[in-house]
Image (tube, rainbow, N blue to C red):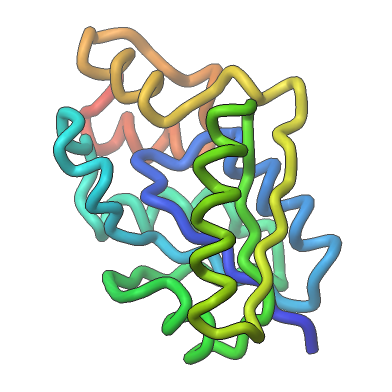
Length: 164
């Protein structure tokens, strides 16, 4: 059975993330989406959502995919991959900046356990302008980001009072 791991901070889970997971779900028998702590991002204004909220938003967005599971983890990514039996890390890239960053991480991760490969998937052009940072900025300024979110995420955000 081929198992892929898609890690991210997912703060929040956007339509771009949904597209990435749907594409991976066609390529692998099982896909595990891991809501992770990203120490690099903690100093950039902080997130809008708790760990539990981010996991709930991802799960709501992906409930239509039977071979996808959502978990959360705060450990080392490659150790998580080994624990769940994943042989591939799937990362989405929106442009050259994302590619350069993810390429360097892939080189490092490849040396930790050489049994885990990284697959970089270019974002679909319909979603390559969407970022979780942009969605958070819209929320902080009282604007609705619904056009960039799965309807289930928008519904949860309304329930939680994050958007009206």
